[in-house]
Amino acid sequence: MIHTTLRIGHPAGVHARVAAQAVLLASRYSASVFVRTSSGTASLRRLADLLALDINKDETVELIADGLDESAALEAISAFLRAADAPEHHNDEHHNEGVQE
Image (cartoon, rainbow, N blue to C red):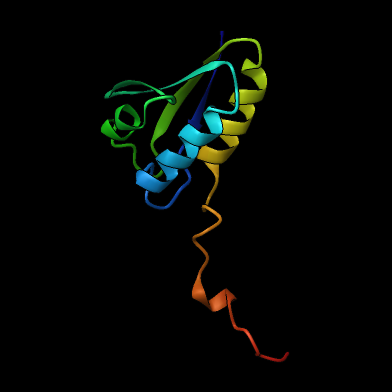
């Protein structure tokens, strides 16, 4: 069993879309992965439990992994949760199609 502490970087915290993506990511690994906050602990196999923690941006959480591929799982999921922005959340100012420089 290994663990790390990280700060949530997603602008809206761990809302439904981010939580669903985290659960999907965790499902790629055989290791059991849990998120622990001051509100409690949730398995990343159970979307409803993760959402119930109501994790906000900049909140510090502990990520715990246990299993054969625990290191890979912990690395991938912690990188995802630390991300400053989810791939689908880009500022419109960066999407100036047809603008010549």
